[in-house]
Length: 87
Image (cartoon, rainbow, N blue to C red):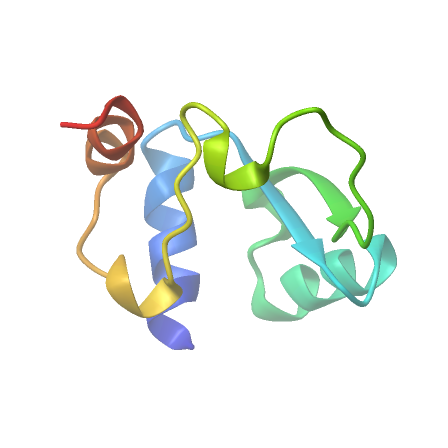
């Protein structure tokens, strides 16, 4: 998804704090970012969680939006901020 790679670069340039995660684990996430030349855009690499113990459902988390990569091609950092604030 070349457009996602470019989008990550743009968000990083705009000052976004980005984490890269993968169901393949932390090392796989880091390796994938390195192969794409965007590893410097992330402050950390994580495995995707498989089990979450929380008193609140993820869909009820305040200021959390899930956005598919194909839906954010033209977004800027401010667009994400507005989405989080419900604007």
